[in-house]
Length: 247
Image (cartoon, rainbow, N blue to C red; front, side, top):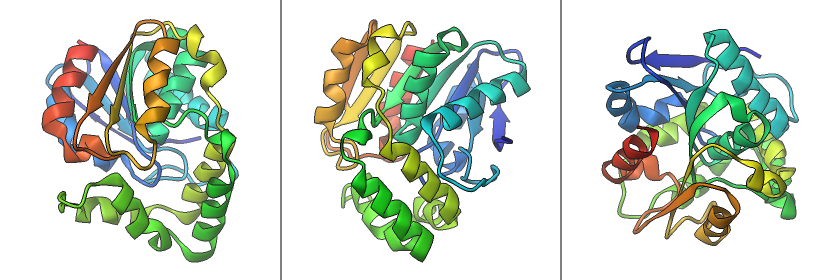
């Protein structure tokens, strides 16, 4: 599976992978890339079915999506990297830390879903809707969950959602419908920074906060007055946390 990616920073620096949210491409990391690239070799990639990556027919699984990242590391000839992921990207990061611990140096999981298999039907229904009507049919509802009303600079993110291939979006929804990362959380060995927000409607904080005691060496941060896509709306808060943990 060929994943599209963009590299920034020195080729000799430690590698940091950036994994995006469902429906977005690597462009969503614009508020982070330049800051991180001063210290790291930053590789921002598109999940399969997203952005410039290949779009195979679904359904996909979390094993598929995590395996794609391992193949990307092999392509880059990188034995070990740190990983920052939000939403779907955060779930993939946790999967990597569980299933390929030798490849993950440090992990930041931001608003990560971990047990959507407990209520799979909304994801199955959303996949069917997007296949039938396109991503335009879910864009307004998604933005209302991703940002608080007072954050209005949402047009670039809206365009990312509109540009997302419907099959890729739907197939990743199907991966989420079967997701359960909880059993293997205690096996994670990488230092983990968990970030959630007080107003996340997509992955509510009450589903993220209990993860911290289950993960050895995990540190939890709760961002106030913020919703789901906190990397985009609150970079002034998120970026220092990333630098501290990754460094």
